[in-house]
View (tube, rainbow, N blue to C red):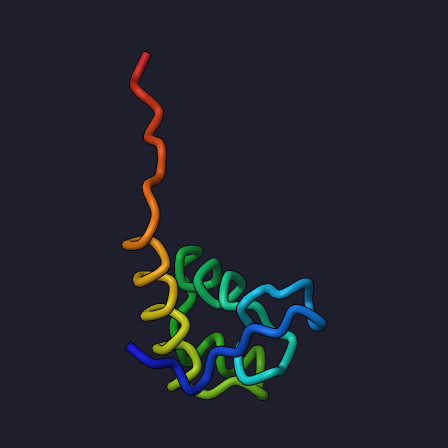
Length: 76
């Protein structure tokens, strides 16, 4: 899978994946969705972003999670 809207540059934002060199981390987009914001709300609050940026951020995050094993805390 290729990503045209996600950039990673070791000299910017410490190499954190960002949306289109905007210094807007993918993690921030995912967090807004997780907090219940709609795409329209995100775009209204951050006019530099586009709907395709949000969609690609979610695809990027999903792929990143598929490639690593995350420890799950066992219930007490």
